[in-house]
Image (cartoon, rainbow, N blue to C red; front, side):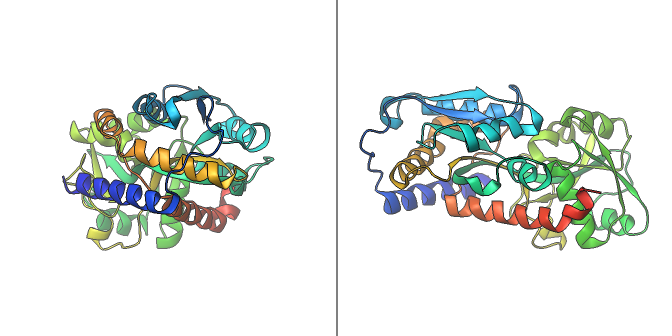
Length: 322
């Protein structure tokens, strides 16, 4: 319940702040049609689910009676969809994008034609904290035991792919604390879960929403959550901070962004409308029902997350490109 209270407080502050800053004036001549959310991943995953919940919660009650429509544009590890928003779609406010750390990773680690700086945040609406999970048979029951062991012996760590957000978070932890990790890269979170339950890895870096079900079913153990407060889904698992490792607040943080050249009056209107949707009962209840964490980070707060992620990737870039 504590986390729900924190989320709701953040939502309330966001809406009050947005109203004070932008006054929610509708720009002249905007919108006159539906607004499209480009999801740069295939349908069916957590990112797609969040976008569709947002769209459903919006209905026709916002954007002057127009809808939010979802278009999946997967391929290239999100490169195709991100390139479309950055280089092809008109920066007129009618095209926004479901933003994840993949936009930063692709920009800094792949040969793409866009930069993460081509986008500006509208809202962060699905913070999903990182967690270190281990098999039930693991001898480690808390972070200290695992971290101290990883300083002297190599741990097999499962990730959903090379250069994925989870891989980068694991590398960042290993780099900062002098840990010995050997990575097992997979194609999906489902494969990570299979490795955990089959005792084929020493640990897996995942988000709470991805692994909570098998932890609650007693098929895996969670050692620590990278969040400021305990996750309501797994209230018995302590945060990194509680266990003496301060500053480790990270995870998959999904949001909505648009092209940096969207005019200010339209941009401010989008910020205002998305803040109201994220504060709605429809959005909050649907997200919780889907086992996902709702939230409402201001553009400034979401930009801070982007900057933090950029800094981590730049520091790890030589190792990632080996």
